[in-house]
Length: 304
Length: 304
Image (cartoon, rainbow over all chains, first blue to last red; front, side):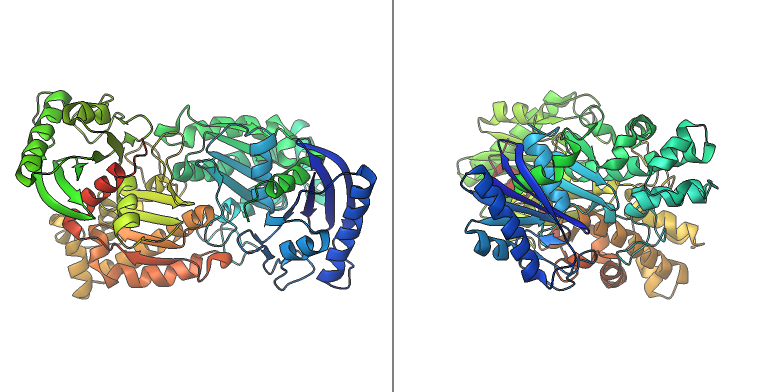
């Protein structure tokens, strides 16, 4: 049984995973703990309850988190987590639980999850893109997760789409993330003269609803987003040559509004030698469990 | 002894390589043969003379060529070679020479050459960029060459730098290659109001000479080229996270005119997590032999 932990800016999920199924699950707040040690204690306490309840033995631990360096097992100065300094969470959890722990970037965990349990099964070269508050990427190349020198490769969201473009939270400008993340899409809608009343509601759904109701600015927003995303994906394909791209996250679930123009545009901007050799599909994992399955896939690699 | 073959649009070089040294070499015209079989016969004939002259035994064959699919050993419809149809050159040479043959993309061969014999030795994650008539890339990830689904990954030159930018020979627009290849640099010089007399001479050298002599348009040309190349390199780093970038080709030899602004600009546009984790260096291989050493590295992989 693998203990899977997914650390988000607000909520930390945990669960026990066996054969690609989340058997039991729990969640705690990421914030409000005295320090990172108290946070790790709280995870351990909740995990022990799950283990006792199921009466099984723990084989390993997988942890997905933002800004995680998989080589070192350290969360490095994560801007969206309560601790701005380095946190060696892999070791901290391994000590507390008495099992080996692998910590990895959350987008890389998602890639491993899709590869092991989801729509990426069987692909030796795979690219997984998470579209949400941020835009993350995880790559499988030659049948192995790409980690790179910082233990945190696949930062597709921080490839430059437009030189001197929109300002990004990373301190640079024109990153793909500033155009195709939730915030980026909302910005585009405003830039296109969209109705500011509509985006009082959070997320992309109000814009999707408006598009379906005939709002032209909303319709163009999805087309522009598809154009930008297609270029970002095609650029990554030119470099690593995946046989499949799996898209993941809430925006993808706005369905054909994004996916139809994306498929058409991607075919247009894709380099000749990759025509017919790569497709784009949506995640094959159940939405609620996908992050935990990704973390479990990380724990199951023994690659730390 | 490895038989190394480097197929270019004009000239095909061949040589015998042992321990990272080209022991003997020869060259033939790529054009002017009745068909691809006559071309392969000509290479084989010249190769046999080299083998007889050195009195050694052939262990394997490595062939670098444009548009080569390393999975299949086929040159696929290469626009710059005399044969526009698919040519299964790996098999054709293996049959003629009685040894296993690996055919690979020329930029990937360059990457393997730098990795095995040059400035990339010892790097588990490496990126090699060839700057010339075209712009090619080859990537080592997790200690293995990246081939991808088309057997020809690493097409950095055909990542989009500017959407709807300069037209590219690949049929698309705004590719990095249209800005930082020899042709791209010459175009930039003209766009900046450079002296059209100066670029009557081929290549980048006349612009470099003009820059050193105080020509402002020529000086800006190198700065703009550095800016564009820095963004293209930083984008690829965000995806695969190499510990080193090796630059390769004639333009790099224009020396500090390009390299100084490139190093400065790269540091500026590089994503935070990679700061201090990746450097840019020039090729560590002798100019005349680098393509042959790359092809030899391909032949030495046994990876076909």
